[in-house]
Length: 338
Image 1: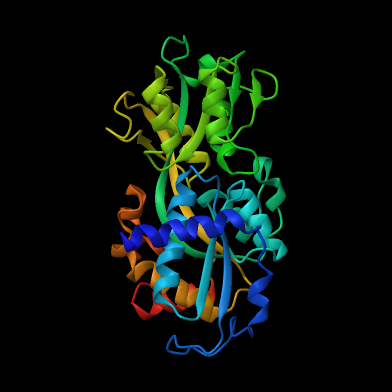
Image 2 (image 1 turned 90 degrees about the horizontal axis):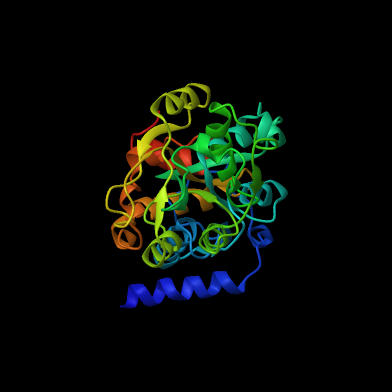
């Protein structure tokens, strides 16, 4: 009961604060090439961590991690902040308005190393974004009404389709699939962009024909919608999955999780990892303490969401962005990197 109350308090704090990350600047920066202390730094660090909408997996997992860190590290205070998602989190970290953020592996990679084009054209130049932790796999979900004639993405031609939430990396996956089918999202369908909950609401209200999002299953918004409306997943042909994964290696093929939504059948789709990134200016000591507490304390918050079961050191160090010195220090200490 105490654990649940602590998590609730983190949620309340996150909902009441603005996405502002200048508080870390009040402590001396011991990061970058700083000394490798034993984790008992005198400085106190206040970190804001961007997540996404309050009904999504990012927010629930982020709040659980923040709660664990706050309870176990005296010199860290982490607030899980609701935001518009992965793209906004990266932009806030780049601008110095936030210290940490949830995003997907694709955006983490391009924003750290540069070279992006198309949907990632904004990341043509590398930014000061560093990897902190790889967390869990998220699946692509394209949903339509059960009585719809839409069976595959190719059937979305001429339809009104939500391609994902705005200011997030999610539309990149739906666009990649549609383009592999030979569909131009600007000419062959009416593309719209809504949050997970708003997309599902407009689908069940008959405003749009299908809606897409990427999340670890089960997601509460879809669980609720499937319990009150007859829905179905849209399948991706296996050859299309192979084509997309060859072009974008941070994706891999999977099937929607069996039993996650009892009312819906499992279908072929894509998946990628959700990760935590940081601004390169966050002190080394702060990131070291954060990673250590988040990984070693995982048993304390593993029940917050099924996705938390996947958070383990053996995959956490495989972040898509260049590792932050604080994260690298911890993974080096436990023998995962040299």
